[in-house]
Image (cartoon, rainbow, N blue to C red):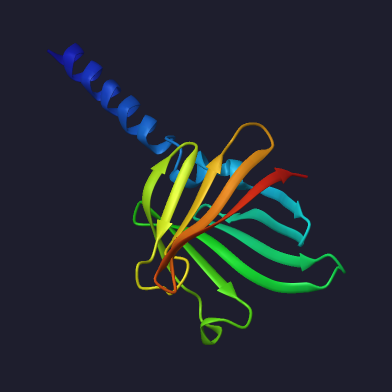
Length: 157
Protein backbone atom coordinates (compact mmCIF):
# COMPACT_ATOMS: atom_id res chain seq x y z
CA UNK A 1 0.00 0.00 0.00
CA UNK A 2 2.84 2.37 0.86
CA UNK A 3 4.43 1.74 -2.55
CA UNK A 4 1.19 2.80 -4.35
CA UNK A 5 1.03 6.01 -2.31
CA UNK A 6 4.64 6.85 -3.19
CA UNK A 7 4.00 6.17 -6.90
CA UNK A 8 0.86 8.35 -6.85
CA UNK A 9 2.76 11.15 -5.09
CA UNK A 10 5.54 11.01 -7.71
CA UNK A 11 3.02 11.03 -10.57
CA UNK A 12 1.29 14.03 -8.99
CA UNK A 13 4.61 15.90 -8.72
CA UNK A 14 5.47 15.11 -12.34
CA UNK A 15 2.02 16.25 -13.48
CA UNK A 16 2.18 19.48 -11.48
CA UNK A 17 5.71 20.20 -12.69
CA UNK A 18 4.73 19.75 -16.34
CA UNK A 19 2.00 22.39 -15.90
CA UNK A 20 4.55 24.82 -14.48
CA UNK A 21 6.87 24.33 -17.46
CA UNK A 22 4.08 24.57 -20.04
CA UNK A 23 4.74 27.51 -22.39
CA UNK A 24 2.51 30.55 -21.92
CA UNK A 25 0.61 32.16 -24.78
CA UNK A 26 3.38 34.76 -24.97
CA UNK A 27 5.95 31.97 -25.32
CA UNK A 28 3.90 30.47 -28.14
CA UNK A 29 3.93 33.72 -30.13
CA UNK A 30 7.55 34.65 -29.53
CA UNK A 31 7.89 34.62 -33.32
CA UNK A 32 6.64 38.25 -33.23
CA UNK A 33 9.81 39.32 -31.39
CA UNK A 34 12.44 41.18 -33.38
CA UNK A 35 12.52 43.88 -36.02
CA UNK A 36 9.99 43.71 -38.87
CA UNK A 37 9.79 45.85 -42.00
CA UNK A 38 7.44 46.38 -44.92
CA UNK A 39 8.56 48.62 -47.79
CA UNK A 40 6.07 50.00 -50.31
CA UNK A 41 6.07 52.80 -52.92
CA UNK A 42 4.47 55.06 -50.26
CA UNK A 43 7.12 54.46 -47.63
CA UNK A 44 8.12 52.03 -44.92
CA UNK A 45 6.29 50.47 -41.98
CA UNK A 46 8.30 48.90 -39.17
CA UNK A 47 7.55 47.12 -35.93
CA UNK A 48 10.14 46.26 -33.33
CA UNK A 49 9.25 43.87 -30.49
CA UNK A 50 11.07 42.83 -27.31
CA UNK A 51 10.06 40.74 -24.33
CA UNK A 52 9.84 43.06 -21.33
CA UNK A 53 9.05 40.36 -18.76
CA UNK A 54 7.11 37.09 -18.35
CA UNK A 55 3.80 38.75 -19.16
CA UNK A 56 4.60 41.64 -21.53
CA UNK A 57 5.96 42.15 -25.04
CA UNK A 58 6.72 45.79 -25.84
CA UNK A 59 6.76 47.14 -29.36
CA UNK A 60 7.28 50.29 -31.37
CA UNK A 61 5.56 50.78 -34.71
CA UNK A 62 6.55 53.49 -37.20
CA UNK A 63 5.29 54.63 -40.57
CA UNK A 64 7.87 56.60 -42.55
CA UNK A 65 7.28 58.26 -45.93
CA UNK A 66 9.65 58.00 -48.90
CA UNK A 67 11.43 61.20 -47.79
CA UNK A 68 12.31 59.49 -44.51
CA UNK A 69 9.90 61.54 -42.38
CA UNK A 70 8.15 59.58 -39.62
CA UNK A 71 4.43 60.19 -40.01
CA UNK A 72 3.06 57.93 -37.28
CA UNK A 73 4.57 56.30 -34.22
CA UNK A 74 2.86 53.93 -31.84
CA UNK A 75 3.91 52.26 -28.62
CA UNK A 76 2.41 48.79 -28.38
CA UNK A 77 2.15 46.20 -25.63
CA UNK A 78 0.95 42.63 -25.80
CA UNK A 79 0.07 41.71 -22.23
CA UNK A 80 -0.81 38.30 -20.80
CA UNK A 81 -3.51 38.83 -18.18
CA UNK A 82 -5.63 36.08 -16.63
CA UNK A 83 -4.70 33.64 -19.40
CA UNK A 84 -5.72 36.01 -22.24
CA UNK A 85 -3.65 38.30 -24.39
CA UNK A 86 -4.37 42.02 -24.67
CA UNK A 87 -3.06 44.22 -27.48
CA UNK A 88 -2.63 47.79 -26.24
CA UNK A 89 -1.49 50.45 -28.75
CA UNK A 90 -0.85 54.07 -27.90
CA UNK A 91 -0.76 55.95 -31.22
CA UNK A 92 0.74 59.44 -31.37
CA UNK A 93 -1.90 62.07 -32.05
CA UNK A 94 -4.88 59.70 -31.68
CA UNK A 95 -7.47 58.76 -29.04
CA UNK A 96 -6.72 61.85 -26.92
CA UNK A 97 -3.35 60.36 -26.00
CA UNK A 98 -4.96 57.31 -24.42
CA UNK A 99 -4.18 53.65 -25.18
CA UNK A 100 -6.86 51.41 -26.68
CA UNK A 101 -7.33 47.84 -25.47
CA UNK A 102 -7.99 44.99 -27.92
CA UNK A 103 -8.73 41.56 -26.42
CA UNK A 104 -7.66 38.21 -27.83
CA UNK A 105 -10.55 36.47 -29.61
CA UNK A 106 -8.69 33.70 -31.45
CA UNK A 107 -5.32 32.16 -30.72
CA UNK A 108 -3.04 29.49 -32.15
CA UNK A 109 0.71 28.97 -32.28
CA UNK A 110 0.79 30.75 -35.67
CA UNK A 111 -2.01 33.34 -35.44
CA UNK A 112 -3.58 35.68 -32.92
CA UNK A 113 -6.58 37.96 -33.41
CA UNK A 114 -7.41 40.89 -31.13
CA UNK A 115 -10.73 42.73 -31.19
CA UNK A 116 -12.36 45.88 -29.87
CA UNK A 117 -15.77 46.38 -31.46
CA UNK A 118 -16.15 49.80 -29.80
CA UNK A 119 -13.12 51.28 -31.56
CA UNK A 120 -13.70 53.41 -34.67
CA UNK A 121 -11.08 51.70 -36.86
CA UNK A 122 -9.72 49.12 -36.77
CA UNK A 123 -11.90 46.76 -34.79
CA UNK A 124 -9.58 43.76 -35.37
CA UNK A 125 -5.81 43.39 -35.36
CA UNK A 126 -4.33 40.10 -36.57
CA UNK A 127 -0.79 38.68 -36.60
CA UNK A 128 -0.01 35.57 -38.67
CA UNK A 129 3.31 33.72 -38.77
CA UNK A 130 3.98 32.87 -42.42
CA UNK A 131 7.19 30.96 -42.17
CA UNK A 132 10.76 31.74 -41.27
CA UNK A 133 11.31 35.49 -41.35
CA UNK A 134 7.81 36.32 -42.67
CA UNK A 135 4.79 37.65 -40.82
CA UNK A 136 1.51 39.15 -41.99
CA UNK A 137 -0.15 41.74 -39.79
CA UNK A 138 -3.46 43.23 -40.79
CA UNK A 139 -6.08 45.54 -39.40
CA UNK A 140 -9.69 45.41 -40.40
CA UNK A 141 -13.21 46.47 -39.57
CA UNK A 142 -15.63 49.11 -40.71
CA UNK A 143 -14.54 52.56 -41.77
CA UNK A 144 -17.23 55.08 -42.73
CA UNK A 145 -19.78 52.24 -42.85
CA UNK A 146 -17.73 50.19 -45.31
CA UNK A 147 -15.56 47.10 -44.70
CA UNK A 148 -11.86 47.96 -44.77
CA UNK A 149 -8.63 46.01 -44.40
CA UNK A 150 -4.99 47.09 -44.46
CA UNK A 151 -2.27 44.44 -44.76
CA UNK A 152 1.34 44.62 -43.63
CA UNK A 153 3.42 41.74 -45.06
CA UNK A 154 6.53 42.01 -42.89
CA UNK A 155 9.99 40.60 -43.35
CA UNK A 156 12.27 40.11 -40.35
CA UNK A 157 15.50 42.15 -40.39
